[in-house]
Amino acid sequence: MNEEGVPGVGLSLVGLVAIAVLVLTNAYFVATEFALVAVRRSQLKLWVRENRAGAGSAMRAVERLDDAIAATQLGITLASIGLGWVGEPALVGLLQPPLEAAGIVDLRYIHTIAIAIAFAIITFLHVVIGELAPKALALDRPGPVALACAAPLLLFGRIFRPALVVMNGAGNAIVRLFGVERVTSHSTHSPEELSLLVDEARESGAIRSDTGRLLGNVFRLGRTKVRDVMVPRSRIFAVDRTRPIEPLLEEVRDQGYTRIPVCDGSLDNVLGVLHAKDLFHLYSERRLFVLEDLLRGVSEMPPDISMLEALRRFRRRRAHLAVVREPNGPVVGLVTLEDVLEEIVGEIEDEHDVPTAAGSE
Image (tube, rainbow, N blue to C red):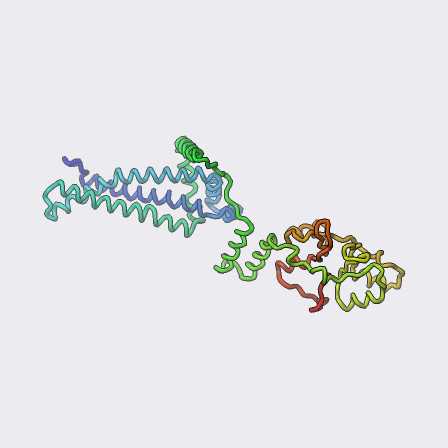
C-alpha cells in the first residue's frame, strides 16, 4: 500500500485473483438459481430413478426452492459486495503506473481516471461473466447445470442456515403486510396448459406429429361434451319389443349393428340393449324365444357431461353403449364407447361399418 492508500503491484495481483474468484462465484450462484427455477421436476424424478449423479441433491433443492433461492441470493450478494470491496482498489493499483507513464502527472487526475476505468472493468466482468453468461447457460441447459451445482449450494445453505431463516422470515413477513399469502406448493399444469405444451412439443419436433395429435385429443376429452358427438335421437336405430324376429334379423344383418336399443313404444322407454350375436346365436339353434329374453341392461348419461367422464362411466359400468337422456327429460341421443375412442384416435372403421348407417354400434 503506497502513501496514497493504493495497493502496490504485488497486492494488486492478489486482488486480480480475488476478482476472478469472486466473479466466478457470482456466476455459480446465478447459474444455480436459474437452473433450479427452470429445470423440470419430471426430468429430475426420472434422473433420481436412474441414479444420475447429483440428481438427489437437485431434487432436494427444488423441493425446498424458497430456501435454495434464498441461498443463491445470499451468495450473489456476498460475491458482489466482495467484488466491489476488493476489485476496484486492486485495479486502481495496476492502472496508476500506466497512467503516469502516459504523462499524467497530477495524482488527483490519475486516481480519478483509474477509479473510473476500474469501475467500468468491474461492472463489465460482473454483468457479462458473473450474470448474463451463466444465466444463458442455465436457461439453455437447466438439467445438467442443476445436477452439477445443487450439492455445493445445499452445503452453503447449511452453513448459513441461521441467516437464511431470518432473511426468509423477514421477506415473508413483508409480503404478508401487502395481504399476499405465500403458496408453498409447486405449480401444476391444467389440462388446457398440458394440451398447449403437447402442441408446442409437436411443432418443435420433440415428439412425433401423430403422437402429439393423440395426446392433444386425450386432453381435449375433458372439454368435449357428450352432446357434441352423440348420435341424435332422429338417427338412432332402435326396435320395439314387439318386432317380429325374422324381419329384425334381416335388418340387423343389412345394417351391421352389433348393439341395438330395444324400447317399449317409444325411445323414452328403453328396456335394454340387444346384442346381435345373441340374436343370431339363438335363432341359429332354432330355439323359441321372445326379444325381451335377450336384453341386457342399458346405461344412461346426461348430454352435458364431458367425454372423459363418459369414458369413466363406460369403464365403471363395463358398457359399450349408453342412451343420452336429459335430466328428468326425454332421450336425445345415443353414445358408444367407440365414439369416445374416435375422439382420441380418429375415425374407426371395421367390416361391419356401412357409410350411410347411423345409430348403434
